[in-house]
Structures are given as C-alpha cells and as structure tokens.
Image (tube, rainbow, N blue to C red; front, side):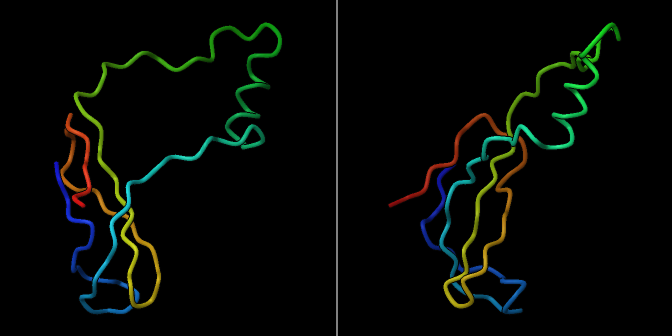
Length: 93
C-alpha cells in the first residue's frame, strides 16, 4: 500500500483540514519495570504452574499504523490505513 508523503486531512486540534506529514509508526521497546512485566515475573517465581497465555491462531495480517503530524499546530495523531493487510505501507517520495 503506497501513501503520499504529505496528505491533506482533518486535524482534531485545529478543527479544520490541514496538511499532514506521514511517518510510519515504530513500536518502542517495552520497559522492564512496567506493571505487566512485574506481575508476570512475580507469578512465575515459585511453584504456581503455567502463567503463559493460551496459544491463539495467527492473524492473517497486521494493522498498518501511521503517525500524522500537522504542519500548522505540530500535533501528532495516529491513523490506521486499511484494516488487516499483508502488504507493508510505503511512503511515496
């Protein structure tokens, strides 16, 4: 899926249609001190049995999330283009 580098779309902060620059969303590494990690470490300590999640079937594709940066107010919002797709999003130059 190919997307333009700059698109004109609605900005919820400006409350009007403005130009936005498009960037791909990159997930950051999860913190080792988050509550979910600490809870999991506490649960697997000792004799408590299995705490791993149940195995679910694989999804056919990922949601392609992008970050839209408004050129007027410099605020960032996120948008999913299409739902589940196997193709990666490419930004046209």
